[in-house]
Length: 153
Image 1 (cartoon, rainbow, N blue to C red):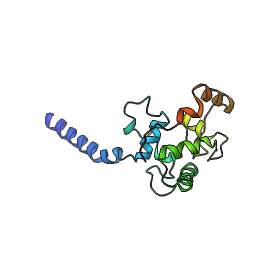
Image 2: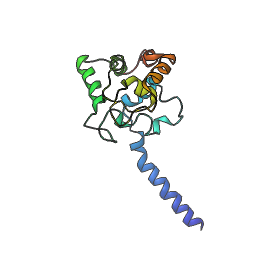
Image 3: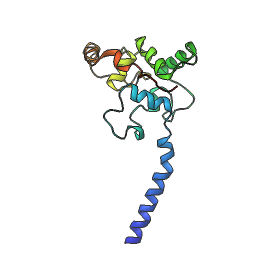
Image 4: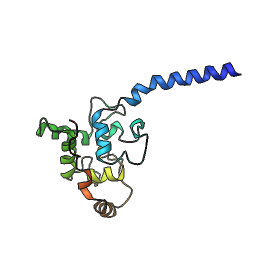
């Protein structure tokens, strides 16, 4: 029985190692956005979690890559408008425009606050807009999403 347990343990460890590069290959923009938006606060393993800032926050596919949703296109437009700008500044600029990229009646910043996806019209907050907006303002409003000084590109 010990040999079977040892083999099973080795097989599981191998699977973990094989999947680790994919789990750890989080683009720097995704990591920075999670921190700038405060999505890293409640999960000590947030960097390993696909639920904290999933790729579909900006991309069409769950694994990211080519193809951007409406919010991702807003970020891309921000970079075209401000070539060489830092990511955090572009993200903040897009959020301060108070746009609703996916057209679901909730501004992108409120969707981040509610932990829904600003580029997916099927992912929207369950609370009434006015209630969520009031809570967001009490929490610091858009200023809470201002980029920290000295952020990476």
